[in-house]
Length: 134
Image (cartoon, rainbow, N blue to C red; front, top):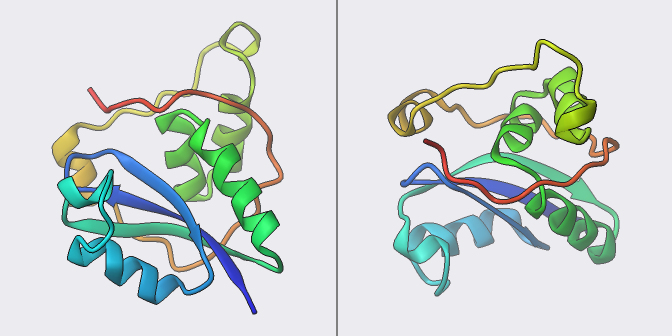
């Protein structure tokens, strides 16, 4: 049995990260508003990234790590931009200059963000806070 960690883009431009053992069913629950909470008031949602894991523990661990990441680092993961993921894994004072810039408006998040069709590895460490796009 596979377990999944996933990132959804909500209608307000914020990201939701979760894990499940049935990705299609869980996304359907989010889309229909059947899950009370963060996504139910931010519909519609769109799957932007997912990765499968052998155990629920691994999927939950990945979810908990990603939830601590900054918006910019999550977007780098979604794009598969490992240089940017590495950049955002470092504390701001230790990042090389000039910094990697990731800019997008709330409308751009809605219109141009495209779901990824592939899974990628989460080998890059780092933390951050949930942030809203400006």
